[in-house]
Image 1 (tube, rainbow, N blue to C red):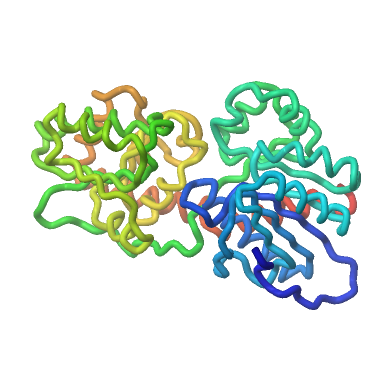
Image 2 (cartoon, rainbow, N blue to C red; image 1 turned 120 degrees about the vertical axis):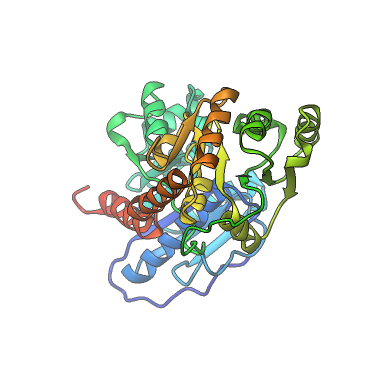
Length: 384
């Protein structure tokens, strides 16, 4: 992959040098990928405004980056095409040719690279991003050693922070909360969209692989007989793909609710936004979300959400204020929550509006960018 842009001419004044090492940004859709895109945009904007030097190394990317996110602030942006050997080679070459002030490692499995930096450039500060389930359990010795020697660990939710501390994976005083954000190029809904006539629509947006059964889609399907009996015909729209689709289709058929369930597959961003706009509520009772950016997407359209009372979801969804939280395996509880929202338009509107206001107050890209600048300043200031 070629550099995303030509190096920008800057003054000879001493300038900060930052290296981003990220797992993936543009090869596929997902929460980590969305986070890495936002991080790239925030870093590039910071580099342009502060006259800094910024390089990026991406493990899985093989295509040219989207210029909306990777802008003129970058001196180089190199994808390794899923080759760990190539990534490490690029990393060593960058370390040997530049004295970085700050190295940001975008996933815990990249954290051992901080130990290499300690040898090559002991003065470089290293920060590691921590997302979800991969750090909710004891880490192996090398990752634990690397995190304990990082200058800072950024956790995307309070739950992830608490799990890091619980398993003594990182010193508590070095763990900082660094929440996810809504994609800055996402187009918000302008108002609550009310359905006039027709069936109410429940929406879920998620991967549906066998490894993703913790998302709780089967529990939602199991809840439908009771929901239909109470509120009448509806549509449960599932957007996403995966190798668990045959099982989920069979489950819906066995419960006699296939006519209410639509497996729509993948969608473009524009089509996805239209489905958020037309739905009555969003449901994803996952038990292992590190954060849940899809909740932000629903909240941007002022839609109430039903999420899992687990992991990082409570950092996004405030139970009873912006949505309802349920146990992932509690089919009856999921049924009651959906019935409550579909039966009470005022509650739907109230929770949806409160969710939108929570998004604006805490999770916009402006907040994310401000948090990024604070992290950079705290780790590169002369007194640090």
